Image (cartoon, rainbow, N blue to C red; front, side, top):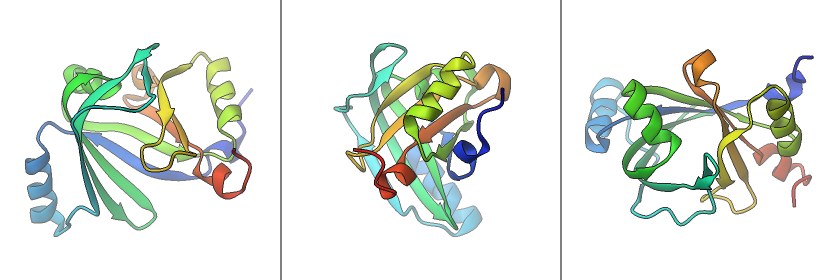
Length: 160
């Protein structure tokens, strides 16, 4: 049975993993003439995030560029244990995830888990304490992870 298309109707972010934040910013400036819309340096991850059933530790630069209706997120991990580090070690720099803004977080998690993709990493958004996110390890099949977030659900008043 296919996952209902409504769950996957809105891509809102493309994530890339990089090694060096300053090089990424310089390259985006040189090639596209773009400056980050947001640049966050995480020195100690104090979220409730879970990575492969253990607390996630993430030290990283998170660099965001808003391009039309899509956020381009470039994650440059510096220390810790997370899917970001795992992917960078295995593949090097490149496309890391595609994020879908879903209408029902629980339904999307259930649908993916039923298909053999339980959340590999999940937590509450640092930008919006009402928002939940989860990554699914579709890397063996797709070459990148699928992430979901429930911003539409929150705006529709369905999430607590």
